[in-house]
Image 1 (cartoon, rainbow, N blue to C red):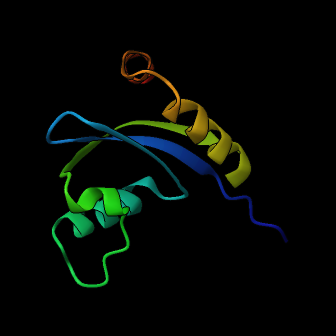
Image 2 (cartoon, one colour; image 1 turned 180 degrees about the vertical axis):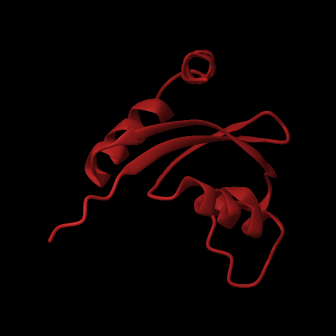
Amino acid sequence: MTTITTWYVYIVQTSRQLLYTGIATDVERRFQQHRDTYESRPNAKGAKYFRGHEPVAVVYREACPNRSAASQREHAIKRMSREKKLALIGAGI
């Protein structure tokens, strides 16, 4: 029996209004990992980006059928201008 895992592309807003884009199967867990990294907790597994940027909230998430599709969408979002990312966030809420 094959288990289908849904991957998500997500955007986190920081306390300085910066936007970070990533992928995960469990966005809430990943967000907590980023918080742990910011708070310098031992064995934190969040992105190094959050060593100096406080994650405040997940402001966008988009389901993808697999990791490959999520990675491709992440790359496309990272190439967007800030204005386009904000429009994407506004459309997704």
